[in-house]
Length: 128
Image 1 (cartoon, rainbow, N blue to C red):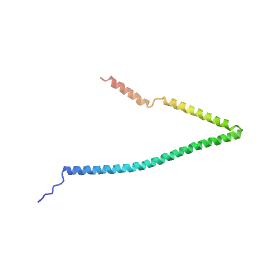
Image 2: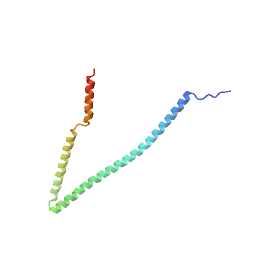
Image 3: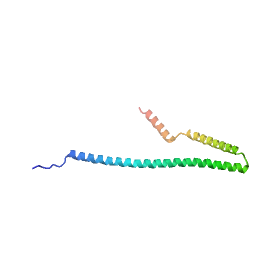
Image 4: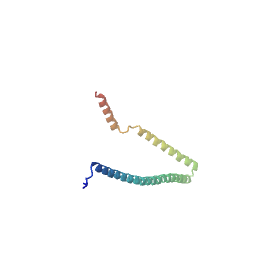
């Protein structure tokens, strides 16, 4: 008579490893599928944002063109001088924004964290 022996430790470990690999493969396939879907959504959103920014730029330009035409007609000013004035105002606004950005950029980022790093470095340098 042949006795049927229960599976050994190696059989259990190989079955567990095969199950674990199957689990990770299924998770990787799911992550790849969801990643592709996310990329498609991201591309559509970026495209919509880009087209929206393009429409915003055109709308801004046409708004200013219309306002300049109205002001020029209302006050009987030459069109060219009105356009030049608006251009100078935009350049001045750009300079103010650049000056503010440069001023804010000079402020240290994360001052409390940097101070803690300095304290830690001093403490480490004092230890023998």
